[in-house]
Length: 243
Image (tube, rainbow, N blue to C red; front, side, top):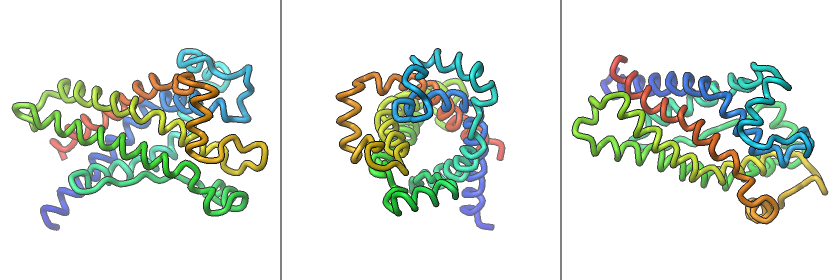
């Protein structure tokens, strides 16, 4: 095996392990963020039952759904996130990998009701959000570390502080795009009057008009969730030292 292939394998393994661990650790925050983002467009959450904010959501979830519900869907996320992040780190100097998501039953139902086009609800805004997030996530982190006297031997605390700042900025900037993306995905399979948004632009416009800044009240949870992203960056660097 060539040196390049060995290096690729190490990057892939370190990136995947770091991603799986961090995704599991921040799963409760991810759950809170998701509920706050989609509750206004969800038929399963009545208007009088909607969460008022992060703390209200954190308190009510274990009472109403049980503590384990914080990790609902985490296994699927880890399965999705492991290869994505592993490839992100393995190719990070040359390429940026796009993320993927989808379950068989959901794919069939969406295709039947909306056609192939329905599978790409929110695709444009998703790509925009990924570009913005990844550019900040990798670009600023590598640039900041490169400005240190000895980047390869930076103390883990310093690395984490840099990574936390980077992921917080990336999370806040990309959060509105993520919210619009999830709103568009939420209406897949709906017909007629149940369709809330005719497209991405219409979604942006209606959110701004009807909800204003309240639509993005989960942004702080996105910053907290960013701790996982910071953990991935730091853990990846540390794992590379021992693999």
